[in-house]
Length: 632
Image (tube, rainbow, N blue to C red; front, side, top):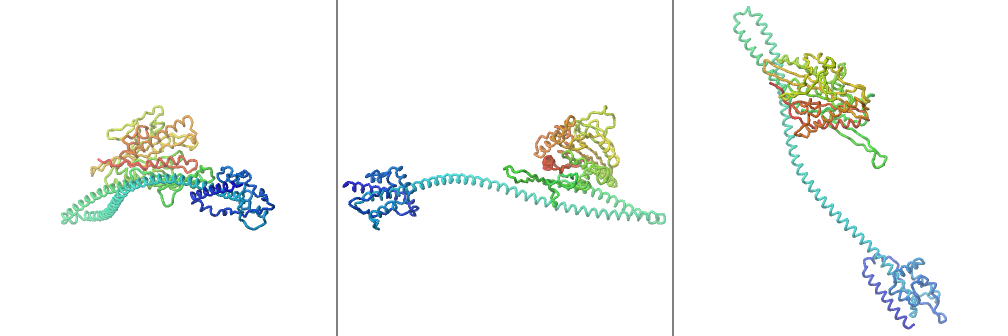
């Protein structure tokens, strides 16, 4: 018993010193532990009754495992981690406070109210020190855990900082790219401003020329009125010639003066006509030598489909709206819009007259000596033949009969100015990549073969083709009726009377003004293309399938040629099909070209409609150069 206090006190001090070192090492963590319960204060020693120490085993039940009898101080000096954890856990389970395990024992033994232990109660002091050690070890463990958490947080922060540095480098490189693009765009902006200024200058010149033209028309009208007045005076003077022989010489001089005035007026009238042609061509070139019009066929029961949107304030835009199911599995639906812009868009309520008024100026260019081509494109049943040919009654007549009517009426007006015109019509069909003469009236067994030939002056002609001289509108309409009877049509799942071929109507125009020694030659080409279709929808079989393959092939080659022209490629594959070879001069040569893209409004035709509009956009982006008049 004499050595126990010394051993215990040394070991307790060692434990306290290690605890103080740990407290200094983890000083930051102790700030967060200050809210923990105060360290265990030493309680008063128990009172000895009868010379024996009272039994304290029940109050020290939590320390029975690690205490190991009298060697409890040894546990306080260097206890294993497993034993300490078990002791702390058992103490926490029964009260979590060492003060609660010691104070009741002292109270039972002595009944006093003091908490200070006697000097001889070494075992109690050892027990108190063990409680402190456990408390400090618990705090040390929590500090270590917090330290590990802080290290993990620091590692995450460092990795995040590396990622942010990479992102910063990426943003810097992207900013440099944007700066380069901004510099390039500044050059484009300057060029755009220059083009805008040139455009405004040209528009001012055009307005000035239009003003001069109006003045000249007014002058011409006044001169014609004056001419009529002079003619009346001349007739009066001639009636009185017999009675005024003395004034004959003066009258002859006046007549000579009047004749000179008439000649001068005719010269001015001719110059005015040539100026009108030049201005008219300038206007057409400003609109573009290749233009695209879009026409929407009405539904059978009237109205317009929901997926086709035509803005009321914009007659050049059409929008296809498609509702798609969400790919994420949600019930919500998304709407995707396809917006296309053309030179003009006609809704389902547009009349034939309204459509033709947009191209009437283009038809006038054919009489002025420019090659003009107009063709209709679209799927089967979209209204191409109705647009080009129409019906028999006047209001429903299509582009071809209206164009012919305008040509002959304009030719009659120009005849008063000394112009004489001759017209030659032809009608050819491209069926299964072979040429057929639609004006042929002989036996089918003796039908001749036809080939496309190109002359030295780049004029495209067809061998053994029927060319009919026509002099009025009725003759041309009769030829159109004959061609419609001979054209290849068949019934498909999409159309009861589907055109199974491409028909090309050509009107060759030759004009001459003998008095002015001026000649002009041009061609008006009006094409009704066969409808593109899919086998699943048309359900074509046998001969119909062969026809469908030929039609789709020629239309695909037409798209390839248009793409080559739009990309300004050095080689354009015109010879890939008979259609593109025949229309070579119209697509990439000296011609003014107009394409109608006809679309069906039914919702099940959405795919074909989208493909047709995409093809029309390629044609609209194509540039074929400036057309020139064929004059001699």
